[in-house]
Image (cartoon, rainbow, N blue to C red; front, side, top):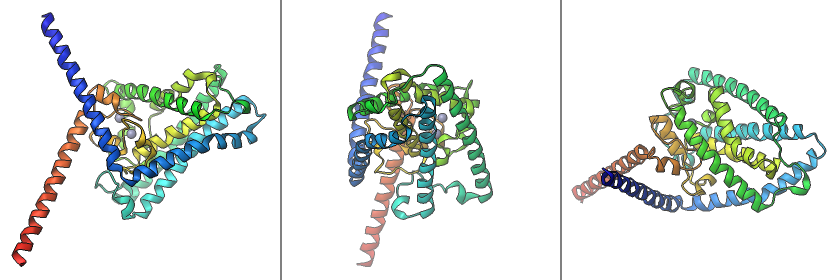
Length: 337
Ligand SMILES: [Zn+2]
Ligand SMILES: [Zn+2]
C-alpha cells in the first residue's frame, strides 16, 4: 500500500517536472518568436521604468503639502481610471484603423461585437459604462475606508523610491496579485460562486472594454487581490509606487483583454507570462487559464493543459493546410509547364 502511494507520488512529481520543463521550453520559443517586437517591448519597458521616478518628482511638486487622504485618493483614482480610459482610447484607435499591420496580431477570426450588430453594441457600451461608474465609486469608498482603517504609505519627497525599490516592489506586487488572483478566479469558477463571475464572461470574445467589466462583489475581491501586495508592504511602499503599480495592473488587464497578441507588449517580457491569446481562450472556452500576469500556477495545477493541447492541434492544422497549399501549387506548376 505504502509502496503504491510512493510510486503515485513519484509519478506525480515526474509529471510536474515534465510540465515545468515544457513550460521553460515554451517560454524560450515565445521570446524567439517575437522577432523585432522583442526589441520594441524592451524599449517600452526600459523607457517607462527609467522615466517613472522623474514623473513621481514632477507630480510631487504639485501634491506637496496636501493632506494624506487627498494624496492617496488622487493617486489611486487618477491612476486606475486614467489608465483604463487611455488604454481603451488607444485600443479604440487600433480597432477603428483596421490596418493589416495590427490585424495580423488578432487572436481569432471572429468579427468584433460592433461588426455584428450596432444596436447590441450600443447596449453593451452603456452597460460597461454604468458598471465602470459603479465599480469606480466602490473603489473610492474602499480607498477612503483603508486610509481611515489605518493603512499607511510614504508620501514625502525625501523618500521618492529608487529604481531598485521600484523594481522589487512592483515584482513583489505582481507575484502576490497573480497568486491571489489565480485562486480567487479559480474559486469564482466553481458552481457555487460562478453566478458572481458570469457577468465578466458575458464577453465570449475579449475586447479591451471587458477588462474591468465585472460584478461589484467580484470587483471588490479582485481589487483586494491587487491591493494585497501594497497592503503587505505598508509604509515600506511610497504612494507613487502604489500609483505606478495600479497603472501596471490596469494596462496588463487591458492587454490581456484587447483581442490582439502584440509582439511588442512589454508584459510578454516577463518570464512565464500569460498572454492576450491565453486569456482569450479562457473567455472563449471557459476552461482553465485562471492566472493574470504569469501562467506558472496554471502549469503547476494543470489548469492550462486544455489550452496548450488546443494550441498544438491548431498549429498542426495550420501546418497541414500550408502543406496542402504548397502541394496544390506544385501540382499546378507541373501541369502548366
Ligand atoms: Zn473567468
Ligand atoms: Zn477576462
